[in-house]
Amino acid sequence: MIPDEKLLWEAYNREPSVENRNNLVMHYESFVKIVVNRLVSCYNAYIDREDLLAYGMIGLIYAIEKYDPGRGIKFETYASIRIRGYIIDEIRRQDILPTSVRRKIKYIESVYAELENELDRSPEDSEVAERLGITVSKLRKLFGQSHLSNIVSFDAVIADNMEIGPEMSERYNPEQAAENHFLQQWLAEEIENLPEKEKLVVNLYYNDGLTLKEIGLVIGVSESRVSQIHSKILMKLRSKLNKLA
Image (tube, rainbow, N blue to C red; front, side, top):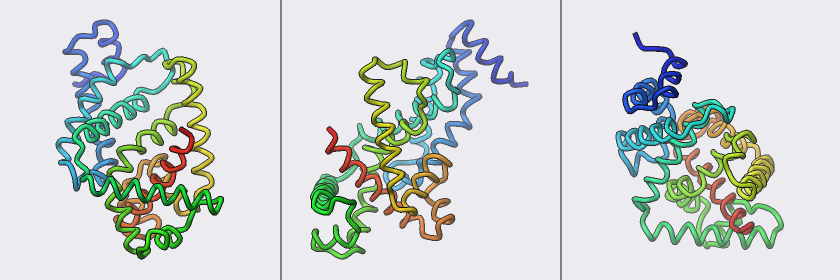
């Protein structure tokens, strides 16, 4: 019979041996699969699911070793951040996105920033496409191509600041805690000001944990269209975030 979660943690806290740690790893293996399943629809065109699971398991090990129950946060919340962060760091390290796509992303971001300054609001897809000299359809295809880059560079920022509560801030120095608090407030305000469909996508993805395919079923569009919408949201937010730097 497998010991329950409380007994596993008690054993590990008494003696943080490899054996006791591995018992916790086995207990939370299914949790890693849940986190990976949320990410796989974003990354499966670029990296094998088994690799994502392997990265996630390493992230879980780090989470177990670094977790401090005295911080007052559930292990699953802390572990989801560690697992997700390790996966994203590994993908970033591999640098698998073509340089040509990176250049397109940076150019589109600069156009978003220019139009937002001119219009004093977030530009519509049609306005961005016109400035780029392309069709709206082509622009949305570019959003789809840039999805991985936008996820890798911004997904963790949004996820961390929506999932980490104030109780986690004490693990940073005061300056870092203040910066994180500001970013958390800024993200909340920017997300609240998104159009209703975009705000729904963000909430379903980050708060409710739905995959892109599941979100598509909820809002009545294809998975690829959700990918485009999600990518556009992240690109707009990243463009605005760059202006804060």
